[in-house]
Amino acid sequence: MARVLPLPRHTLSLVVENRPGVLARVSSTLARRGFNIHSLAVGPTIDPGLSRITVVVESEKVEQVKKQLHKLINVVKIFELEPSKAVERETMLIRISAMGTSRTEAIEVANIFKANVVDVGFNTLTFEVTGKPAKLNDLIELLRPFGVVELVKSGRIAIGRAAKSKPSRMRAVG
Image (cartoon, rainbow, N blue to C red; front, side, top):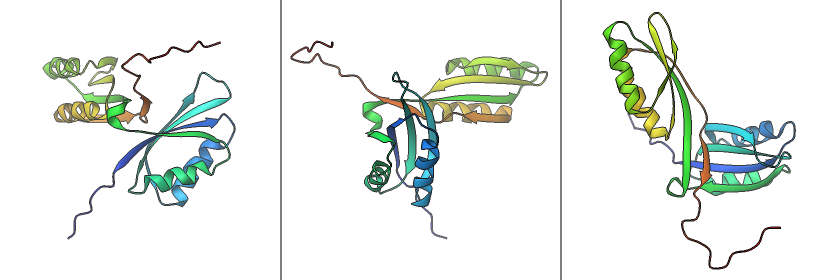
């Protein structure tokens, strides 16, 4: 049987008008064109009239994805964020089985990843952790032997990295 190779993932940051139905139009545009949405997160910007949509799409045709999104009336800007030039984070809640001495072991593993215990049940522990997607996946694999009861991950959020050098000429902002 032929093995299907995964499509490359691209993180797009869209600045959109904060209007009803914009998210539905963005997601339906992608779905209609056959682009798989791997992750989607929406939130406000400092301008109350604008929102930011961070979408991770699986496609070899990212330029086509951007062209389709640019056609939408409420899309103001689109940025493709390269992993090396962006800060990317996800948040995860993970509930595991933990009884007796396994609780201590699970907490020790979670501490390595700077995860916080946010709920303690009779036979379970729930951790909250924020980090790069790879970090969260590594934690899942290390907690899997305890028995993952439930798992929830946010969509990826991302922002371009700040400039590392001072501009040659400072401009006053008025």
